[in-house]
Length: 345
Image 1 (cartoon, helix red, strand yellow):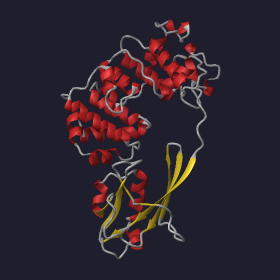
Image 2 (spheres, rainbow, N blue to C red; image 1 turned 90 degrees about the vertical axis):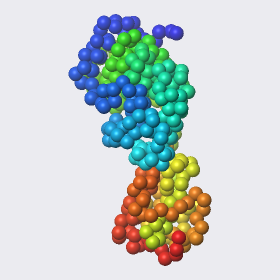
Image 3 (cartoon, rainbow, N blue to C red; image 1 turned 180 degrees about the vertical axis):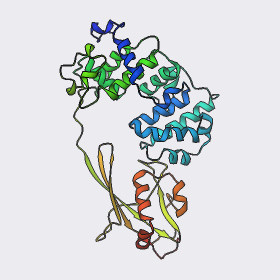
Image 4 (cartoon, one colour; image 1 turned 120 degrees about the vertical axis):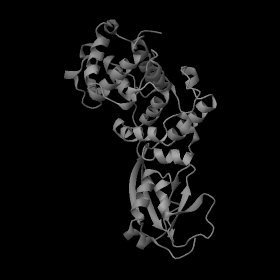
C-alpha cells in the first residue's frame, strides 16, 4: 500500500501528542464516550448516521432507558421501536438496529468483536463496524466520518472528491496509515472532535488548530472537494384527513416510512379544493410539499393498508415527523370542527 501521508506525519512524537493534548482539554463530553458497552456504542453510531450530535443527545439517554440492552430491544415490537425513533428520520436505521438486536440475541446475546462478523449484521458497514471495534474494544482501526474526512483531506491537501469512490478510498488509506496501535479510541475521538470544533466546514479556525504545523492545505476552506450535488427535486404529496366519532383513518406506509402510520395517500389533489394543511420538508435530494385535504366520504370498508384508530391512541403510534405535525395541527379543537364528517366508520 503506497504511503499517502507526508513524511512529517511520521513524527509521531509530535503529531499525535499535540492532537491528544488538545483533546484532553477541549474534547466533547458525550455520553457514549463513558462506556465500552458495545450495545450502547452501537446505538449511538446508528443514531449519529445522517444526524447531528445535538439531536442525538436528546434521544440517546431515553432510548437506553427504554431499551437498555440487546434483549430488551429484540423483544420490542417494530411499532414501539419506530415510535421511539420518531423524529430522528432515516427509519431504516431503526429497523436495522432492531434486526441486529434480534440477531445478537439469537446467537447467544454476545456482540462479536470481530469486524468481519460485525459486518454480517444489518446496517453495519465499514465505518460502523470499525467504530464499534475502536470505541468498544479499542482495536487499532481507522474510522472515517464527515469530520475526520474533512480533517484528513486538509492535512494532506487531498484534491480528490471525498464523496467519490476513489476519493473515499484514499481518505480511508490515509486514516489507516495514521491510526496508532495503542489508545486508538482516544485518537479517533480526538480527530473527530478536531473536525467538529476547529477544522469546521466553512470557516476553519486555523489560528487555534493544535496541529496546524502539520497541515498542507493551500486553501483549507476550499477543501475537502466534493462532487456536484444533483439538483433539488420539488415534489408534491397529497393526503386525506378523515375523522369520525373520535376516530381517525390512517394508512401504514409500505415505502419511504415502511411500518409507520401516515395520513392516507391521494393519487391527486381533489379538483377545486383547498388543502386543510400544507407544509414543506426535506428528504435526501427532494423538497416535498405535503398537502392534506378533507375526505368528504368515509369508506365503510377501508383498504387493507388503512385502519381506524381512536384519536387518543395517535400519541403512541409511530408517525413520521411531517405527518405527526400535520395530525397534531389538524386534531386541535378548532381544526376538528372544520374536518369532521358525518358518515360512520
